[in-house]
Length: 278
Image (cartoon, rainbow, N blue to C red; front, side):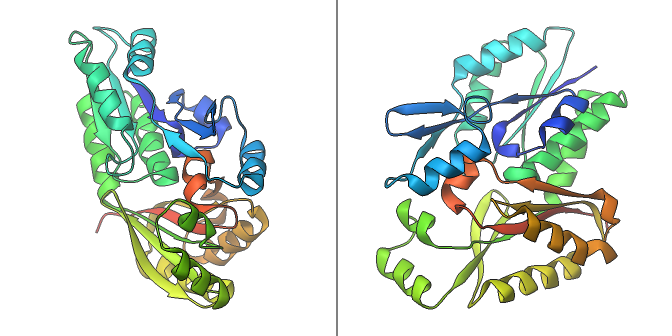
């Protein structure tokens, strides 16, 4: 059976990772000189606590080539193919590390796939790959399924504050202050490997209403996940609102992990969905 690998930015709930036999390689989150393996050496609770207390924004780093090579040697082999699905290369060097590791193992059939996104958009790609692997699909068939899903996946999220984008140097301080004064809630759109500004609205209530409106426009879905960072109750309310679009029991709720959380901060809410084929 084909082995499936993804990275920790996928934010797949741990129980599902275990059930589908997905291998997750961690990125690192660095607070000053202290480095933590995402999801291994630091929990979401610990991360968000440190994030809000820290004056300086943490940094993140991709897994090393050596870490990938070690994992591939452990789980794969000449007769044991691997499909490795990762965060978009525009957002991280993770995929390049995976490719370089694969080049060191020319006898191993390793397929590196670009999810064109991150967090649970990547998660959906890895889940689809793992389900196909369990169904006995070939590596080539799995890659085609993942590439098809990636093209049909959308991710929209409203950020609670501009502070973390400003800390990370993504926007100027003046604009961050202006946004705070005006209660601006930026909505971002992740597509084709890029984080794009979608809209800015004045309040969290309007941001949620806009996200729900876009979700209704994009439906129907094959898969739907509500994303949040430290606001699960709000995520459950959004899931309830979208129950008319997608079976409520099939709507996943997932928390944004440390790596993506470094840039969006607590209080973000959004959705990622795989649209049905036209």
